[in-house]
Length: 231
Image (cartoon, rainbow, N blue to C red; front, side, top):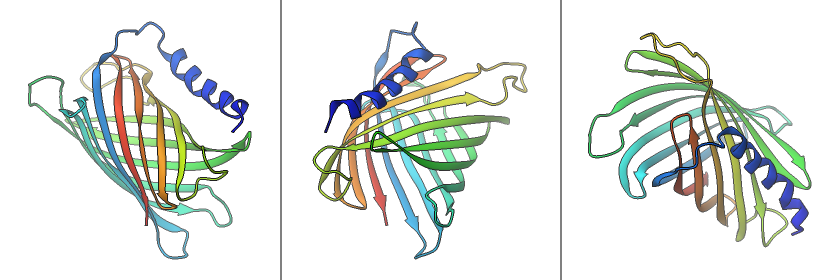
């Protein structure tokens, strides 16, 4: 693995993150983020399902930040790797500390995933538009994520391969004005992530790493563990 192949993608990711919030230097206590991701294709068709289950805590093993379950119907364009999805998510949000109050959100989303190649690496671009309903409020949000995996002991990410998993995702609020007269910022949050992954098979992988979550109100680090399953 040549260092130059790693350098440009890493600079892109960390440059995006640092340019968003340079003044926020005090991080919140370390949190935890645990995810199960699944992807399924219906036989030899272009249709399928994907989704995830997330638990995120303000602490590494507790203090609920949010719990999210989402799933979507996917369609891959014929003779192409471009994939579209339409789905629904249900989320429960907690508050930091001993208080037990919670907020429930219903979320509809549309997305497009599109791969590209640079320096021999496959980059995956994800564009997602969300409509969020909670506590009588409606808010929309635009998301753009750049994802890529770098195999370490093989030329391709096959079974028994160690790899680096990296991504950066930017969130932008749709509506600025709220119904109660309040206002939200244009920038919602940014997530930059790095992890060491291992592919047990072509369809089952595990990743262990960390994420820097930068929002308009805080900037903190969280431990991250995820399972990635195709069936």
